[in-house]
Image (cartoon, rainbow, N blue to C red; front, side, top):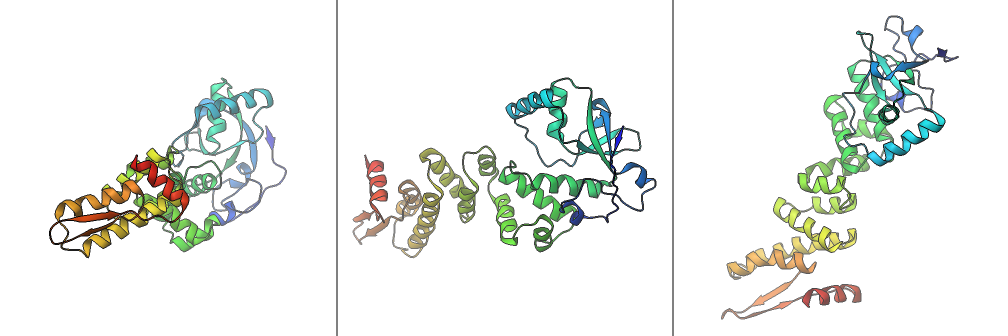
Amino acid sequence: MAKATKKQALGRGLSALLKDIPPSITVASDKNADTLVGSIIEINLKDIDVNPFQPRTYFDESALIELASSIRELGVIQPITVRELETGKFQLVSGERRFRASKLIENTTIPAYIRIANDQEMLEMALVENIQRKNLDPIEVALSYQRLIDEIQLTQEQLSVRVGKKRSTVTNYLRLLKLDPIIQTGIRDGFISMGHGRALINVDSADNQLHIYSKIVKDKLSVRQAEALVKATKEGKKNMASKMEAPTYIKNAVTELNTYFGTTIDIAINKKGKGKLSIPFQSEEEFNRIKKLLK
């Protein structure tokens, strides 16, 4: 058993987790904490339970295979982190990818740091550790932020300080959770980006959100094009609302036309029911795009 040469006694809370310190957090009030925390030991994989507070819900299989191959050649370079349970078993705090990859190559043990943490601290550690990683999708980040707000009782301002992000950044992530679940899945699966999602948030109707989302995916619209489409849809609805003389069939079609062309269609109609459609464009690129749609 190899033990760390230096032990540290730090207070509870996320502030300790976000500093550049060795992973040896203690809780002074815990009995025998000084004899456990800071240790690195080899633990049987069969004695480790996964973290029930793990915010990550998807583990890329090919990436796990690559990690497993690396572990086979070089071993586990960075130990996982666990807490000891009253049953004598251990529970993951962080390092589930290393844990899963080690099982893939049928290793029997894995090096681990021991930390002492209650359930709330487990949740904080798991969420913050995952939020700091680069490979979380935007919805996973948003869900992690929401869990910290709901379960740790933080305000958005407090959360921004805890995770080292601007409040506006935190707010932008949280707003993604207002999107239709189908669109959230599209973000998670990479069909659209967070920027597309932020544009769609400004569409009030869930049906219109999905309609525009489908067009973004089908036509591979950029974020800028998606923003223009959302703006055109909103302006089209506003313009039609001010023209009470327009027949129902026109009112019903205006949103679909705006969505299809990605711009605000101007509809003029006289008392005899005759009218015309005007399709505006702002650049040669946009003109060519509309021209293709008319073919």
